[in-house]
Image (cartoon, rainbow, N blue to C red):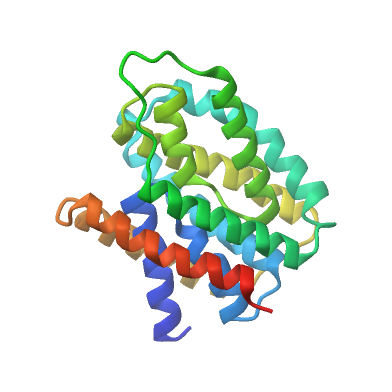
Length: 242
């Protein structure tokens, strides 16, 4: 693992801490295009690394998490992840899966420029909550994306919990979804190098720690705009590349 690899993996961890998601958006294109891994292996590495790190963060933030929302969301997303990873991922061509990834990435960038702003006094929207849980579950199973950046505003908009609480709760949901996807991919016989996985896990963990420290020092608005421009570049490249 060279310095470029280490820098990318640290950036993945920082994204998880700073934005409540977005790690897989950096990780999967790099593993597939930068390191030449098959998409299934890239997705498996993504769910392993991000799942473990979000799980650790969830334990640390357990008192600030809205566990009822996490359980409700996960009960809907859980079967969607399993079915998508088992039946969709093996039959959908990698090119189509990467296009879906690109569209998802551009959508997240748009969400950062124009975030959801629920009005005070709104009640919970069960249909919106269920639809967002199903969609993120399908994406996680298909391309290894946890969807944390989508989950946080969805919890705030449809479940009516404060955004800071929603970010922490979204990481717990990503951890559950990642575990489900992990079991599904392993069940299909997808395997990755253990030594490389461990090194990547350590680098992402370092990024998580750095991100937690930076979060209180850098204005959130500036961080989101910079990350949004970065996502536009990644999403556009994934869609238009041969």
